[in-house]
Structure formats: C-alpha cells, structure tokens
Image 1 (tube, helix red, strand yellow):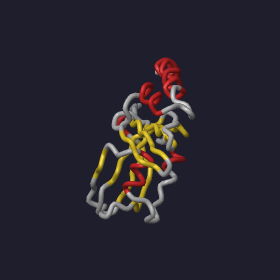
Image 2 (tube, helix red, strand yellow):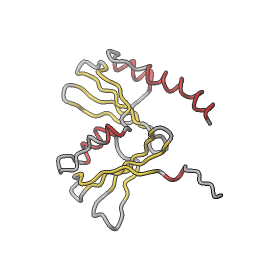
Image 3 (cartoon, helix red, strand yellow):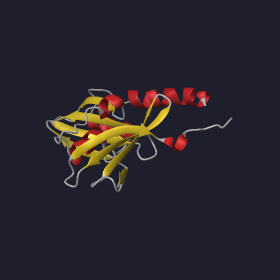
Image 4 (cartoon, helix red, strand yellow):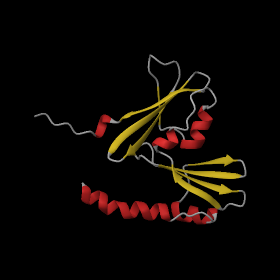
Length: 156
C-alpha cells in the first residue's frame, strides 16, 4: 500500500502544480479539461473540478475578470469545512459554491430536509462531511464522520 501511495504522490503533486496563479483560463482547460461546474464570482469566476462521488477531492480554480488564475486550492479539508456557518446565514447555494454540488443528497427520518454528503480524507482516514439543510435550503447543522466502508477490522 505504501508503495502505491509513494508512486501516486508525484502524479498528484504534478497535477496540482500544473495550474498556477497567473495562467490563462485556456491553459487551465488545456491542462485539466472541462470543469465539473463553473460558478460566477464577484469580479471573476470559479472552475470547480470534483472527483466526487468516488474521489475525495474537489479543486477550485478562481479566475479574475480577465480570465487569469487567482488561486487554486483543494477544498475537502477540515479547515474549509469549518467555514460552513450553521447560524442560518449559509444556504445550499453557498455550500455548492464553496464545495461543489454534493454527490449524495440523503434523507433520514430524524431530520426534515436534505443532507448533503461529501467524501474526503485526512491522513489515512476516509471521512464524510454532512451538511443538514432545512426545507427552505438553509444550513442548520454540519459535522464530520468516519466513512466505514473502507475500514479493515480484524478479530483476534
């Protein structure tokens, strides 16, 4: 497993390094292809490149009004999720602008509204981040949890 990770790491770093601030939109498209989604931002636009639902990364490429890259970042991180406000000031549109559309929209009997599910990884731990919306689409709750699907258990 460690060999696989060691072999994949340079490729992942090269992919991240291939898009840099100052590059033109056309260069980004040439390097990474069409984005999963494009979102208008004040003074520019955001190109969202999602690896969801199977992958655990979402890259945001922010462009200025002239189509030049301002920033590139991977947003499936604890610090990015911590920005989600549960005080009623964030809506589904805010979540999708910052993290892309959720690959899963779940419902449970104990919550009256959709639950957006994002897969991510921290270190060697596979995780979910759940964002609970009320029926009007306002964020009311958010938290992380372990993605148990890939966990290996041994019984002695």
